[in-house]
Length: 232
Ligand SMILES: *[C@@H]1O[C@H](CO)[C@@H](O)[C@H](O)[C@H]1NC(C)=O
Ligand SMILES: *[C@@H]1O[C@H](CO)[C@@H](O)[C@H](O)[C@H]1NC(C)=O
Image (cartoon, rainbow, N blue to C red):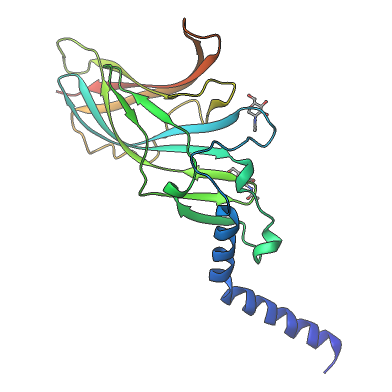
């Protein structure tokens, strides 16, 4: 047998071998990442500045409107980079990504204001996060949101505007900042036939940095605004 054939055979050997070891590699990686990991402690960002949390709202269904309270089915998408969740893929059989239960890791303390004075915390512990080797964590918790929309007597064809606002409950922008994944909501998965009375007209999103009278720091607020048309 010449060397070339041997090289090819050993190549195949390595491929087959590493395939059968993916469970082992994932296990090894999970153990490495979680070694002395403390989920109550916020990670450092990669560059020593604030952790940027990139957020989006994926609108799935307009469920109903009851007494100016609108219920929506959404998926909130959050992506951030954590300095303590990076690894070298070569050390774990080339693994570039791992999925882990979201309750194992630190997550931003994002709250959702419904416009009627009620606050809901985003904390779907049942969903996995996807972590890649650069330390990017992607989390897609499904959230049923309640939103206050102000309107008076409705006529067929009237348009109303509603807002969803997301912000960190405790972090100022010196430690956590919000970025938008897009300047509108993601409506590509919207079930447009679900609600016969409310049709989506348009959406837009922006981030504001607010300063409150209590404190000198600024706080990031991401607002998702959308217009709906009433169909009698
Ligand atoms: C967060 O975003 C700002 C720009 O707004 C950038 O200067 C900073 O480097 C980003 N931080 C990380 C860790 O990517
Ligand atoms: C990790 O995910 C981020 C954000 O989606 C992406 O920009 C980056 O290229 C990914 N890195 C690797 C090594 O896959």
